Image (cartoon, rainbow, N blue to C red; front, side, top):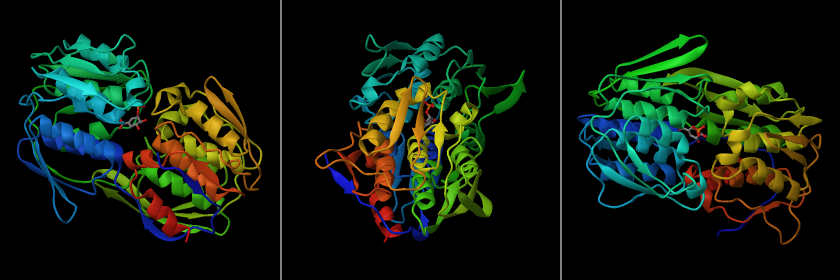
Length: 439
Ligand code: S3P
């Protein structure tokens, strides 16, 4: 465990790049690994979660290497031709790797074992086990429906129409990936839209996929026994990583920061909308498209934020950004109320409990409810900070660590966190970029 204290900082200034999008990086490796021929990926996020996906795809038979220029080359194994892994697949902290790769295994005649760290081993897998078993896979997990689990894929698998019981891009993607090697058409019905990177990128790799709307719900249909063609993918910057700097520059007086190349897919851009509703000063510069995704540079200047009631309907479009939004709320004028956030309890940690405890320890006024937090902001005054000798518990959760690092920048006595190591799962350059921007 690497303990660290984040002290109050001067203004964040200059122009910074951010690492590649985590969701898109996982998918780029998986789909390239399923194509026949050579794909290249530029801008891949080289965080632990994505490297776990790369290691698993190698075990399935894809050849993956990183060039000296940072571009990755993938020679795919082909849909239907995955090899059986020789050892257990170590998914580390990564729910996305686990759930999407379970989808891949489900329709191949191979057996695979999935293991992970203490955080991942507490997360619910029944949400993917259920549809994948309906498609014919055999799956043995713990009695609580968690890792470690062993699965035997079905070949041929059975196409299903699956209506998502929870708004989850991971569950949607697991079923669609299983559908790639399943005869016929596999359909997923989404009552609430979630991030659509799988749909966008699979179409780019040549999969036959149709998206339609029926009675106000999104229906995604994938044609099975697909032949994926190799492709060159450019990964845009991760809006979930940019989020920490958007909030930091909004909160620290005198800040004027440009964050370059931020992915602004509407299914991911909820934090931008909510920060603007709170009074943030964020402008989009040079809006463009990168790798089939909308992207812009964001210029973020300090602003006085005001608390709001956050519409729960926006939650899927900013599901990973609530921890850092709670920090913004703790410094805003007035009260911020959030609701409809039950899913936050089953992320890398219980993010409602973890952030309520962390912000309270740093001196914020927070009430925890079953489905959200109510936060009474300081109106811009710094938080007191963590008491001497006490540390925020990060609970193996990168986003708790980084959110509380930002809280430290706007604290009187600094915020000490018990472990910075989880940051490496999604944002290995965070500490350096923070030091540079707040120099
Ligand atoms: C992700 C989907 C979301 C998100 C996670 C990445 C993805 O999870 O929280 O960080 O890449 O599909 P859920 O599907 O559990 O909402």
